[in-house]
Length: 71
Image (tube, rainbow, N blue to C red; front, top):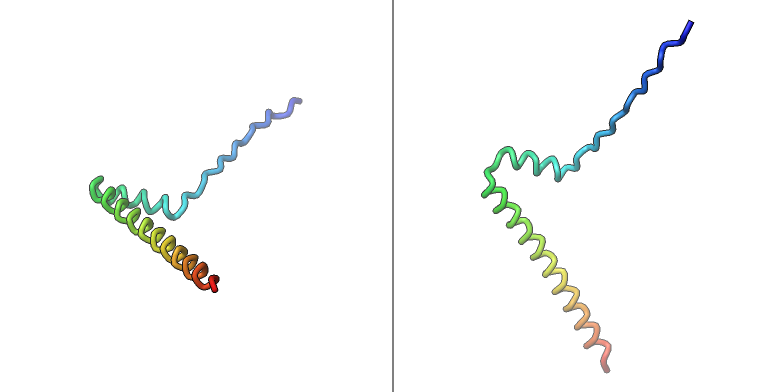
């Protein structure tokens, strides 16, 4: 008697999309291309404004320390 051949089972790992990826997928289904681009541009502007504000605060702090360090 021969043993039945063993079948190799393949396990597929599917990555769970991040929240941002899932949100962009839903956004692409619900909005037209122009709205999507406008929203993305607006968000990039917000991020850039935050970066500039952080840089400005760090510069002001450095200037105050340099002035305070002088006799």
